[in-house]
Image (cartoon, rainbow, N blue to C red; front, side, top):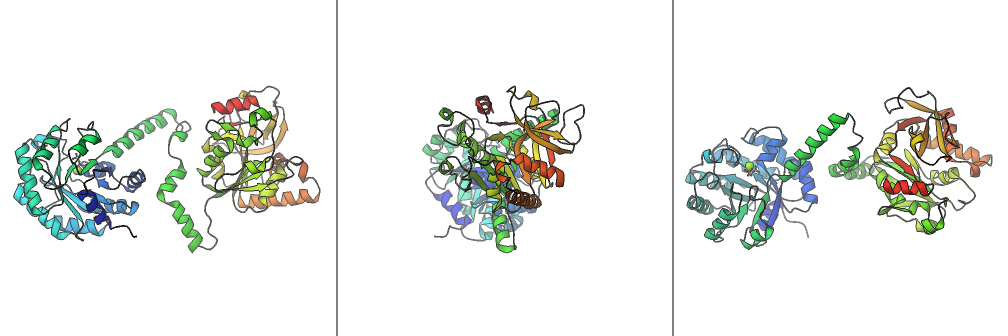
Length: 539
Ligand code: SPV
Ligand code: MG
């Protein structure tokens, strides 16, 4: 069954005996967010549309600008949009054009208020707001109804009589005149902190037409009270804009103060979420359809074949990558982090208890010789089918998402992340993959604005000769993948593949194409020991 037209959908919501909640949106992004939250219709608010554009709610944006914004919002959502038409942006003739054009651009209805043009927001200098003469305003409503692009396009009349201090009798008189003009519903607007006056209106009105409320000021009213008073629709008219404003103010101040984005990075929507909301997945799919060889996203390989050295009691006989850190396993966390950075085609190389490794949408390749081979043999298994840019991660590491981003945005054929604060990591006498850089670090730590290149990496105890610790994350460009494949083939041929690790590949790359190093300071952990596990739980 095809879904009804948006106009029909809005009309059904208005006329249904059920209470409908509608929320404000002010651009395509907020329209998508509100739709995903489940709102069955949206309010294109004059206040928030104008605020989003940095101007006042005094008809400072023209009706054609409103129509442009509304069109983008309609494109962004599958639910109907009720447009705040203010006082109509002019006389009956302008109202006709406004309604026709909004309809052409995908709006499902309009709400017109009985003020003059230009109008002022209802909560500013309310008592001084001049009202239109009711009969003349009724003419605009009739013009709107006659100009509708289809018979279900909703026309709602809003009376500002209570806002302007003209009293209940005047509000009722006006609402009745507008009903007789043929509208589908009325809005009774109020600036009272309590719903008493709008509910008094409801009782006097007696259900002659559906009633819509905008409880910005009487915001504490529970939903049950709206239902008990037979309200048809409640519009939350500005909350998304106000929430976004608060968060933007906090973020801007924090970033300015800290001169860094490192502490905000994980508190804001990942880039991948923005891309998702923009509908990039559809474009990637269209590229596959319309562009020869089109590709979407990066590839990722997670090496999780070995058993590791943690006691069996801890791993419960499961592979180390399945160890729970908080509510999710290390592997699940890795997959989530990589996916947030557009790593779509993910392969886990499994070995020990391989059948336990099963994650939705993640490929598994086995290295059945995991007990007698090293990391390079596991990588070789996955490289056999890999093409294009690929990120490789050890299956026992956790890192902040931005680190994957650093590597994926680097054009080098091989790029790794190296922690220059490795001396602060516990475990005296521990061994790890320590790194020497081609150019020794300066007085301050290496920061990521200085280019750094790998001289060599070795599994060793920490010492003065090293500048950092490789965290177990490597990005290879498409050419890097080819070079790695060649290296693997040569080592297979000379019989050394089984004994080699990823550091051997890195040292080979350092000699032939160079390995770009991104220096970080903490923000990661691996799980090699009980100490590490404890650290990971706190991570
Ligand atoms: C709007 O959201 O623009 C409205 C409601 O018209 S109010 O701000 O209360 O006037
Ligand atoms: Mg408005």
